[in-house]
Amino acid sequence: MSNHRTEDPPGTRPAPKRGATDPRGASGPRTVLRRARLATAAGLSHPTDVYVLGGVIEGLDLGGAVDLELDAREQLLTPAFLDLHAHLRDPGQEVKEDLASGLAAAAAGGFGTVVSMANTTPPIDDAGLVADLVRRAELVGQARLRPAATISVGMKGERLTDFAALKEAGAVMLTDDGVPLADAPLMRRACEYAAEPGLVIQTHSEEPSLRAGGVMSEGSVSHELGLPGNPTSAEAVMVFRDGEIARMTGARVHIAHVTSERALRVAEWLRAEGAPITVEVTPQHLTLTDESLRTFDPVYKVAPPLRTAADVAYLRAALPRGAVDSIGTDHAPHTRAEKERDMLEAPFGIANLEVAFPLLYTRLVLEGELSLAQLLRLLQAGPAAVMGWPVPSLEPGAPADLTLLDLEAEAPVRGESFKS
Picture: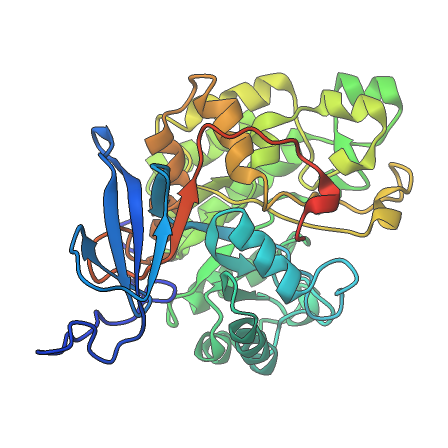
């Protein structure tokens, strides 16, 4: 959006300075990916050699000596994806996930940068915790981590955190995701105060008293199964409140994991009225419905819940017309023992970083509902715009955050082989 403050993109480094006699200068090793096909407006390019110098794209078909040569085998080379919504469970919940497994899973799924959610143990509500995450993630050496911090101290919804200190320590987003921020005046103050350090506010838009104890979407399926339901009204009401506060304050508010037609229609109306909001949907809400819960398998228990086939159809139809800004995974792993509890006791969440792209490519692109270029926009330029980061590219001087996609390969999904 035009009113977003531009920040350095994840991992940007200056273009390498080339030596007069040594073409590599002192910028690091030189690598070539041979026979890569690049996505262009006209489709896939002819096989191209892509040169990388010191972690930065040097150029195309340059020639000359290299330190490492890789064969792309005429597969699609594209900028790595950005995920603005991943629960990596570190610190304090490492039995579910830690930085090493989470960032390895991100890289395996084609994601070069992930924004980690702050609902850990303890919550990321202190600058020291943010700085520690950044430091430890750099040591892991997989996908880049850009931490989110909490809006409220302890995620209790009572008192705001120190936004400026959190930004200085490396936080790029503020969110109590997992817990709806019920206090509207506190949300207003958060939006007003976030403007100064230029932070994005991400919501968990469910009205708590309407959401209540629902474990799945309220409707005919929940009634047949006898399970407590979470109505779409809980989402639509809160999207309206959060969007109105964004319009009133001018804050950059990102509406996370929109699940229903009603909520998305509210968001579209708010944007038409000038609210500076952006919208995210998830792979699970684009490909699964509440019918999945007929198995009583808690793997399908997510928050917000899976909705009806009509809701899924509306979300999918909204993608090519630009009503959605980004796809975020809402990757939320739990232990097998936790997910084997019954539907009332099992935790909300699903682990999907490693299958998000192949799932969406199979279900949306191959089925003709979305073009490959449109899907890539929702995973690259879209999330970059939400954050005010430059658009990922393959231009010389851009960071060499690259993903190679074999669009012809087929493979079974086996959870036991996940890095997560």
